[in-house]
Amino acid sequence: MSKINLLYIINSLTLGGAEKQVVTLLNHLDKERYHVVVCCIRSGGPLEDEIRDENVEVIYLRMRLRYFFIAIYKLVRLMKKKNIQIVHTHLYTSSFWGRIAAWIAGVPIVIATEHGRGLWKKGRHLMFERIANRYTDMRIAVSEDVRQIRINREHTHPEKVMTIRNAINPDDFMVSDSVRQGKRKELGIKDDELIVGTVARLDPDKGLHYLLEAAAHVAEAINDARFILVGDGELKQYLENYALKLGIADKVIFTGSRTDIAEFLSIMDVFVNSSIREGIPVSLLEAMAAEKPVVATKVGGIPEVINDESVGILVPSENVMELTGAIIALLNNKALRVRMGLKARERIQSHFSANMQARQIMGIYEDLLMKNSI
Image: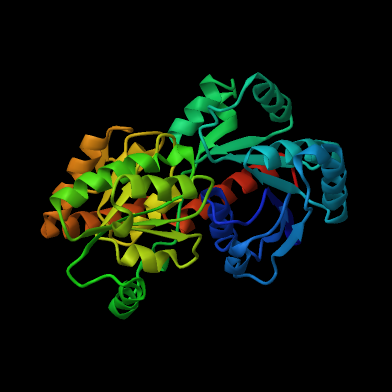
């Protein structure tokens, strides 16, 4: 049986949640069945090194937004040259461009994964979505919350959008005690210090100024607490200045963009997600897989992950006092932290594993291939 030619289209391979999901899926696809090409609309990034299969070809278009027609031309040419049978797109720009190009190129099967809630979309964006949806066989939502938004706000037919939640390989986030101790030593963290941390893009959606405000209150109550923000983004300078203003600059470590996420998670006693808007944050899944007790805001698809108080604590978004109280409660109770961390990992292993996600997505491919008699 000849392989199915499958094209993934995404903006880049930088350290974002959607980009991580593409790489995770690539590493769990059946390469005996699919020949995979990845097209980055803009550029590559550090995640390219995590694509473990040398048979996956990565192509960069290096296009900017104003080069719409050139990008469409290049995508159409690529699809025809590679005889692509399935196009699978990710994120708004890549998804719109990719689906239009697939229609022009006559690609028989077109799929789009919806990674975020998309409430930022204005009238013209919704119009573009309606146009692209005409040439889309299936939209995959990373949470039921995202699916309902696509149905109710974007008027996608319920049968044309399916929920397949974000997933990870849980074993990637367990590290040895020696590695954990080495990371603490690298950062100058003392043995008796408790670490509260997060992994996130430093942008407005992540609500990180609320986390810093909570950190200031926690620091008053627990003298040996320290805080780590792993990630980079447009608000880095603002957040560093805000930590200084709050008087906790000496207690907060901003690491910048990092690839050694498992090592950073290993040293955290409590993981916090303070987001205002979310789909299903990959970093939350990673922290839970690393057996970390989590405090997270009750937004987007997060309650679909933390579905029980035994696996994590949910607090309202933008509520500093409740966020503070939940963090302090965990820092003051080691037995609860251990118990919650174990339950969190069990939750990820049973419901958010990459193998399970890949099987579901390949099931969609096969159903559509059968319907199209390919």
